[in-house]
Amino acid sequence: MFQIVFNEISAAELSQLGTLEQLELIDEFKVGKADLENLNGDRFGKIVRDGLILYRFRAKDYRFYFEVKEGSVVVHRVLHKGTFSDFKFRSNLPLAEDEALANSKHFWKLIDEGRNARRL
Image 1: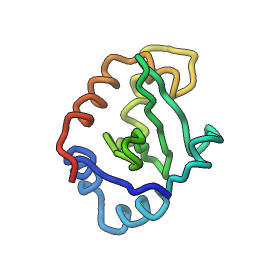
Image 2 (image 1 turned 45 degrees about the horizontal axis):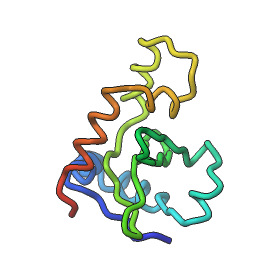
Image 3 (image 1 turned 90 degrees about the vertical axis):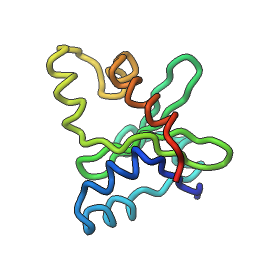
Image 4 (image 1 turned 30 degrees about the vertical axis):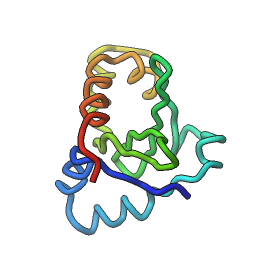
């Protein structure tokens, strides 16, 4: 298992949830090398842009977007699935969620904000 590090943005997104929901999500969010080598699409996904590999983990109605850096999982954003379901619906894209996000400038802006945020 990797050490999981939240930045100030992803920690704030998580803290907006109720305590019990936070605990349930964190309990589900376990990442090992085998998970990332054998992405199953249901729980884990991979989004690539300009050489940056970003992973997605689904837990209930939330998505954790993270990268593996220096032996740690660095969580850039924790977003409700509705955040991008609406985008996908409005843009009428016949793509999978991860594919649609890989092409979304808005998504990458959110991720870049997270990447530049201070780690906690």
